[in-house]
Length: 80
View 1 (tube, one colour):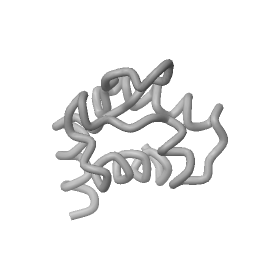
View 2 (spheres, rainbow, N blue to C red):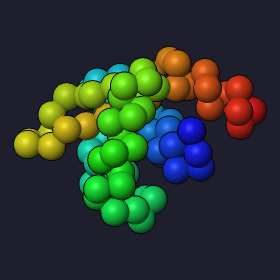
View 3 (spheres, rainbow, N blue to C red):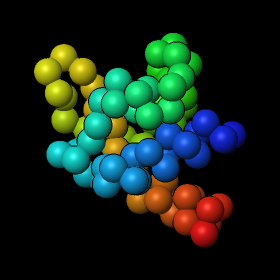
C-alpha cells in the first residue's frame, strides 16, 4: 500500500461509495486523482484482489467500484 492506494480508498469513501448501487466509475476516480488510466487500472485490480474495494453495478459499459468494510477499517486505522 502506498499513497495512491489510500487516495483511491479515500475518494471512494468521500463519495460515499459503500454499496454496489453507490459505486463510481474509473473515469470518475481518474478525474479526481489525475492519474493515467493504466496506472489506475492496475491499482484497482490490486485493491480488488486484496478485498479493500469491490465491483459495483455497471454504468453503461463501465465497471464501477466501492470501498468495502475492510477498506473503511484500514482507512480509519491509518488516517484516524
